[in-house]
Image (cartoon, rainbow, N blue to C red; front, side):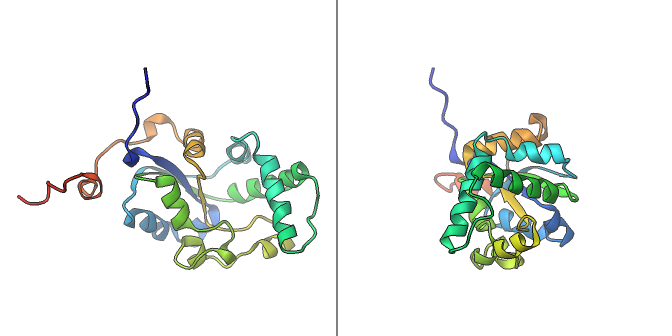
Length: 205
């Protein structure tokens, strides 16, 4: 039997306000950005991630370590710079070590957002991974001045306030890693009538 296709409005994604976002008192502003576009918050909690939990988050994708290493090498070469290593796995391990330290350095706010095209919408609002080159109007473009160059020279991960799932499949894995099923709340918002009802026939009395 064919699995029933879900409506676009049921798509969910994970967003984590990282420790730097919490420390800079940007929790409310970041939530506002996602709420304002029409997404629905269906789960939220504040935790201090352990090193092991943070590592497991990045390793949910078996190919992540090599992929991030290759991407970093390509990034260096595109700027006519010499990569710190030509071995993607070795470079990936270095990046993972920095990310683990970053993510577990203090409280983080984990959230699950639901709505049409939630994954792409959250990524668009959040902005590109590097704050320096992220568009004005995005969270990272408006609230961070960090860059890969500065992070590399300091020997740390780039501080970019938020983690956002990169695909629907990635979101499903990450949500399950950070939340139990019973922590996700199913409910209806009044505004969903305007966002999703086909004929807008529930406005006039």
